[in-house]
Amino acid sequence: MTTMDIAGFLIVIILIVTLVVVLSERINETATVLFAMSLAGAILWFAYGFTFREFVLLMEWDTILFVTAMLIVVAIAASSGMFQYIALVLLKGTQGEPKKIFVTFMGFVFVISLFLDPLPTMLVMGVFTVEVCKVIDLDFRPILISEVIVANFASIPSFVGSIPNLVIAVWAETDVALLAIVLFPLSIILFIVTLFILIRWYGPELDAEICSDWNLLYMVKPSIMIKSRHDFYLSIIAMSILVLGFTIGALRVEASLIAMMVASAMLVFSHERAEKLVRQLSWGTIFFLVGLFGLVAALERSGVIDEFVSGITGLIGNNIFLGMSFLIWIPGFFLSVIDNVPIAALLAPLGQSLGATNAVVPLTLFIGINVGGYMIPFGDAPNMIAVTQAKEGGRPISFLEFTRVALPIGFIHLIISTIYSFLVALMFV
Image 1 (cartoon, rainbow, N blue to C red):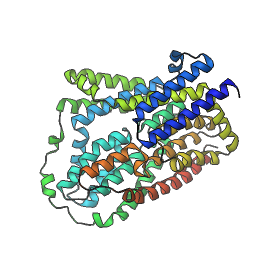
Image 2: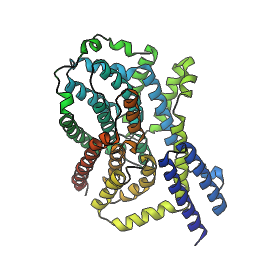
Image 3: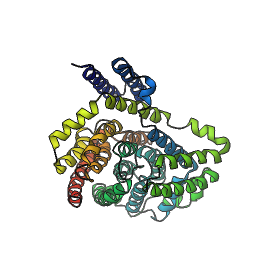
Image 4: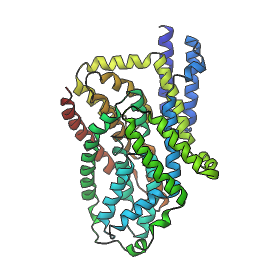
């Protein structure tokens, strides 16, 4: 066995052990990944004389900075009460009818999930959902479970819709415009199908003509949701600039540069609150990405990723349908219990390689990664947030209650997505 083989083998062992430890939840996942990255760096130094400085320069720092910038934007927007304000304005038009309330919540979550990762979406909407439902005496558990499902698959066509999407977009050099054009219709189809299934499933809970105590909520002025008018208007301007900027980004203007300019400008205009906002950022997420990208860089430098891509490509060959099935079903169903960020990082190079056969093939990885996250309660962080919020609200969501809804819907989504991808791929042959 050569030195390269030994180094690559040891780094793979480190990756596997890291995933097992992260899944066990006995040790902080950020600490685990950073320690694993350090071990991988030591192996590269010992095997190739590769300095730690050279090692970290291989990492995707533009993506890490992009995520940091987006977390800043979301933190300021969320703290301003902007999302709650918009949601309450929309709810006023439902007149207290449970089905209309349900559809309004789902529609709003779908729209904001095009721009926000499912985790901040549930952090913002989860608490709001519980409080609103308590006021009008409506069971919030069906809405929380449904919001998790919608928040995940709604992110499919947006490269800023989730952190895994960002990872794939960078590593696979995805055409952002093609991503939106090809997959946005799919997300609409999935939304319509999901809404139909959920309304049928939760029919008894949504059959009441009007919620009790609706007038109490109707009397609440949406402006009360605004915690800071300064940040509220600042957030609206910033979000508008981001949407425009990302549209321009399709013409090859770097999204990371646009996001960092907007985020830093928001901090500047936040004046004395800037330091507090920076302290409240999800630094655990940021450093988790640092460690993860370090591990991926080590795998790439030791030749493991090239061997993996070559092996899978050899099995798949030029069969684009087999390639799409692999990228949809492996992360979407078989790896749904594993955090989707490392899976995205590992499979992105494969997506890039298979893209040479058909432009649609690498895009299917976005489907598998986003659908796989919501099938079981502990499949991803947003799921756990919803479960925790329900427990704190006094109506816990059991494992069976969550899974019997999410698992069949996820399976249906994978089937629809596979058929849709096959049909679209035929147009690119």
